[in-house]
Image 1 (cartoon, helix red, strand yellow):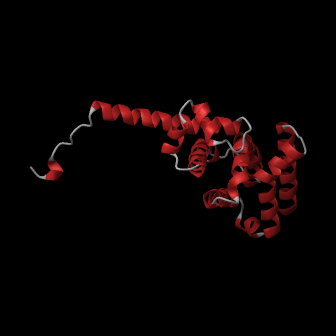
Image 2 (cartoon, rainbow, N blue to C red; image 1 turned 30 degrees about the vertical axis):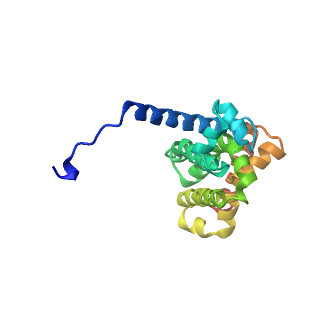
Image 3 (cartoon, rainbow, N blue to C red; image 1 turned 45 degrees about the vertical axis):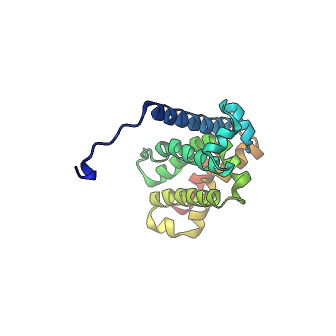
Length: 202
């Protein structure tokens, strides 16, 4: 019988069991990392992750060669969670309404990722992966904004860059963290600022 047509030999039950346990341990480790960061620890130690996941330290390093690997998994998990929010269809009837709508959409995203963004920023300068991930997210946000603007407005550097700044995570974080505004107040302020920019240049 040709090799290609031979039926595959099923894995022994004990092998399947080990594989499932390994997958479960890996998922628990990633979840522990996310929970620790969300709780306010921007740089969980391997020991802390192991304790939270209720696994041995050796188990953490068996699945992840170093903490950089864990940050990769964290980034992938958060990106997957946010994709549905980012790709949600716009409701605004006009391009101006859709640009203002971006404030609320991004506010929801930024509130969710704020702890993870802080953790990423703490390590970004030492990690080529995290830097590339940051650059990709910035460019994706700029592309989403550009796609909502008429070509003439998108080509206006002053208008586009001002809108990009107002809609950035950095602007949102400044209002929420450094200036201590509530989520509702920060959103209202940014929506008003975006409308003024559009009224002036739209």
